[in-house]
Every structure is written in C-alpha cells, then in structure tokens.
Length: 283
Ligand code: CA
Image 1 (cartoon, rainbow, N blue to C red):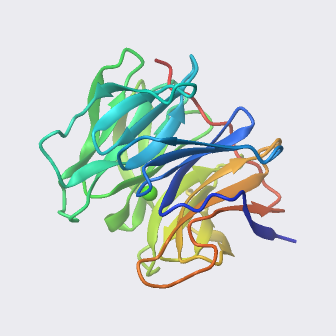
Image 2: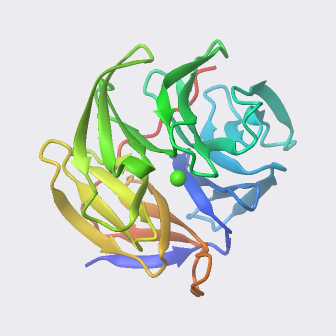
C-alpha cells in the first residue's frame, strides 16, 4: 500500500534537485533562491538564501555544498552561508541559467543550463572536475534536466526536456560517447524533468505539469509503474530515508492552478524498491 504525503513545512515556489546525503534531504527552490535541508528523523529544517535562482545542490566530499545557478557554479559553506565562485561558463547569455545537476560515481559534478526563452540549442551540459576545471560535456541542448548513472557507473542517463526522451551515453572518466535514445515519453503531454535510478536499474522520472512520477525500464523503454501526486508540477525525485526506500518528490507552484500543497516536498512510502546512494563532488 502506497503512502503519499507532504513532509516538512517548506513551501517552495519551485522545488527541485533533491539529493539524499548523510541522513537528510537537500533540495532547492529555484525561484525562491533557496537551498533547503530537511531531516525527516528530527523534522529539522535549514535554509540558505543564495541570492540567485539556483538549479541544483550537491554535497562535497570534503564537506559543504556545491550549487549551480544564475551566475554559475559556487561552493556554499553550510555554517556561514557564504558563496565562493568556481566558474561561470555562460556569462554572456542573460536568458540562460543553470538547471538540474548531479555528481557522477567518480566525483565529477555534471550540471546543465536552460534557455529561459526556450531558444532551441542554446544550452549545454557541463562537467566540473575535482581540479575545478569546467568542460562542456554535451550540447547543444535546450533544457538540461534529469541525470542518473547506472550502478556500475558505465552509463549516464540524461534528459533534455523538449526532446521528450531519455538519452543514454557510455560514461568513462567524464567523457560521454555512443549516444542513443532509450525511453520515449512523446506519448505523454507532460514534460520529463528530474530523474533518479533504483537498485534494479530502473529510472524514476518526475513529470512537470504531469502530477506524477513514472518508473521506466531503460532496457525495454516500457513504463513499469506510475504514481500520481496532488500537484501538477512534480519536478524531481530522489530516494532517501534510512534504507533509501522512500521516494522524495519536489513540487512547484503552477502558474495559474491553485493547489493546497503545491511547492511542498512529498514522500512516497511503500514502493518496495530502494534507491542507490548519491555521490559527492570530489573537489
Ligand atoms: Ca528540473
């Protein structure tokens, strides 16, 4: 029996980018310019105002966080809240900002940009190496979104939202090759957004404007399971909890439809499947 409920008291304008790390769920509120940390065991919540739209947050192996937002990539000190700039690859593109990101099993941080004016092919997926050098990993894209690595770290699954499909690449030492399409979501009106992978190797995708997360088998491309949520803007998902058996889902506020719990963090319990641990940035 599935249990689907909002947790915590945070109401985001546009929640996104959940990642489970050391007993807590970190996520962002893109339009609220905030990074949040929620500890479900204690109910403790912490918030950092980062002063810009922030698309993603990831943990750093040596402590602290890395974020990516309007003005590039930054370290975020959890104690002081201070930001330290790392790199900004698109300073001349005022209509672009960083969107979803995730760390690879080898400690590299991947984050992509989005064209806010939906200008096709003006965004990119970038890779930040532990030596703090920034590289273009893939492009052009338009709305760089969900990322997930296979458990052996050899395949990267990737969503560029307007393409309405999941791409797969062979992954080695930061490099992407052998691009192919493994899942089509073209039959759905909603947009594929954030993504995570479970221990069986299946992909869980949150569908923006779709009020659902859907599990797909990347081998066959088939839909395996659909879980509906009471908010249209289901944006991203990540497994968390003590056994990685709970699926956390971030949501946003729809531009016109009023929904009581829009923007809250949800948890889905009772799926009977576990996630795989997140990775941290190695630099
Ligand atoms: Ca997203």
